[in-house]
Length: 180
Image (cartoon, rainbow, N blue to C red; front, top):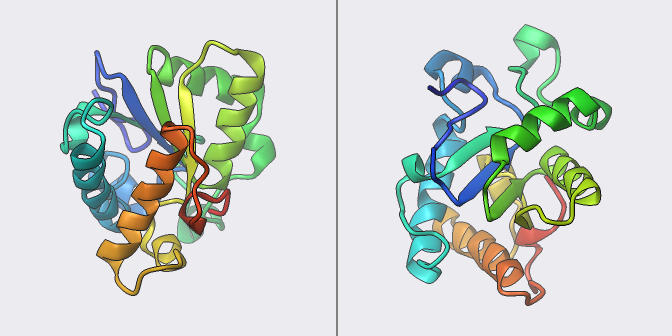
């Protein structure tokens, strides 16, 4: 059963870690709702087309989707939209995240806090999943991806950055930079 911060997928080998659930996730009861979810859907089509051995489906239901912080954050509720890095890096939080991505072979970390959490987990355990570090898929973040003038082009650039990391080639685009 899922929650605003986690969509489990027993048997999945690939997962996505975002920053935290917000108001749309809270109201809809699952992670990556609204614009972020729409951009994830676009990205999954491209990733599946480009690297079907890893991204075996274009359906989000075939992947673990979680967050580096499980608590719903948005200004009207908590006065902020993201957790602090210290909160994300707390041992109890990292233990939760480790359990949620246990068994995955590949994880895409989306956003600065997700990057910090996955790097911390990698420092503790060398046999963890391969990780690609990418921008968050919120529309605001996607709009900052250089090299394209529309959302589909920016999503392709984002995917190119992820694919380059998974193939061991450095990405020439800013789409996979550690920016949120």
